[in-house]
Amino acid sequence: MDRAPDWAKVASDPAAFLSVRLCSPAWLEAALPVLRAHAHDDGDAARAIAVIDERLAGGPLPDEVFGPRPALAAFVAGALASAIAFGAPGDTRDAAVQRIRRARIALPWAARALGLPPPDASYATIAVESLAIGVDAGRVSEADYHAGVEEVLIDAYLASDDPRQQSGKSGDETVWRWSRELVLDTFEGDATLLDVGCANGYLMESLHCWAAARGRTVEPYGLEISARMAALARRRLPQWADRIFVGNALDWTPPRRFDVVHTGLDYVLPHRRRASIRHLLERALVPGGVLVLRAPRIDPGEPTPAEELAALGFTVAGEVEAIHPTTGTRRATAWLRR
Image (cartoon, rainbow, N blue to C red; front, side):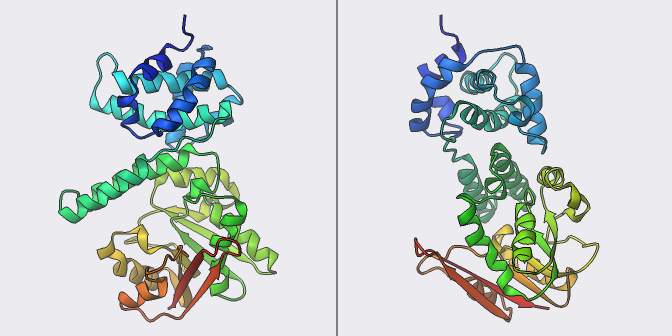
């Protein structure tokens, strides 16, 4: 008798499960033997579902609550995967959607518990691209766009146990520092710094530490459009809980002004970018303060942040770039002064 009938059902007909893009066919094929071998209901499945729901609201990971429980993780992921593929009695659309969102947390949990590679999910990238196309075509409102992006991106961030991936960045700590520390080269001395789109607060934490290593003091603050991501940041950084705000950079009224504001153009839709930058310059910065853009990777033929700001009608105060010492990858940023 198969100890993991849910995974056995998925293995017999994986197409419907794969259609929600929680993993690739290759990942599932390689992982199924391990998942089937370990899945077992030890009596905590209902509690595990409740913990997953808490995580979707910015609470702790299942790993933090249960510790190493590979059998439980594999069982819960299998139950959700099977129900996604084959439905459940009395199903409603809302129940089906919630099941998929729970599986976004459960499958990576099972992979970690069993020592499997992380699932190569593509649902967030595809959904964000689809929403942007919908806005351009007039089928998706801006409010629905922001809500849809928040759902898929934050679900993906919350599924990970890696603080960098919870901040939307892949790679190890060396790559993280190389790609993000450039911010400190855009201003001198000590500063208060607002990180717009602060996610789990890891960049706030990092900039504070990197500045200290340079003999400087950066007092970080964060603005996050997602309330559940802000909840995670406050839980991670209780010493700065009162510095992490929830709001949309387009219309947020800051409780104070900052020496530096760090943001990204791609945080808002293209036709809103000038208004977003103007709002932050006028409402969030002290006189003489610096607004600096997140440093993206610059591929050949792509505009630099300085060129993008100039195209929006702003006078660029400065720009700086870094070349990765081994890959040759180029990152650049630019800043404005109030």
